Image 1 (cartoon, rainbow, N blue to C red):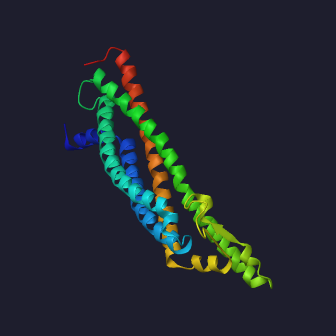
Image 2: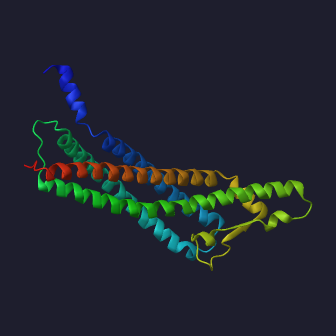
Image 3: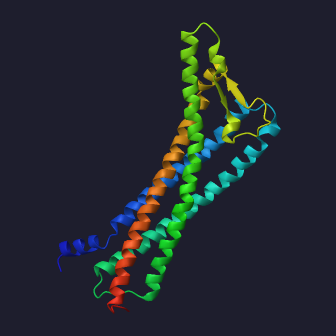
Length: 245
């Protein structure tokens, strides 16, 4: 067998779909964990400076940020290991399906392991869909806040009355603060000035980064589900034909 044939045979054993999903998964998790960690740190400062005067008002938020940052460390480690496992499973099933290493061999344990990965990945994708939805909340908050600031600037230039003072942003509506927090809300020119601060844009960009990372990770999990399901279906079909170890 020539070197060219060996290379073609080795390339045929690469699970390109699983490899793509792994790269997307690592990219998404890196964006989510990195952006989310820094965004939470900036959120505490942002809320403390502009939306809460009493330390007790954002104690719950501060504790949540503290513990969720530890969760982020765990998520990064978990997805790194789980991505490697799914990639290894992709190499196994691709080699078995394409009969890369000679005679086709598929054990019942191998098929059971593939089915386990399918179920775990599907459950993980459903859970991550909820995480993806929650990451949209702070992004929506900053989008609305930026839109309110733009409206304030327009009103301050085009009207004689103090109508811009009626444009407000309430952090309590988004769950950042309890309803008894003071002030919990900013209006008018104060709101417009907050939108001009570097803290606002940095936090906004970090949440967008985390939101995009969560979406990329969700896409990677769905690709994993499709790839592992297809490979398992082929293994099961060939197993029914009596091809077994």
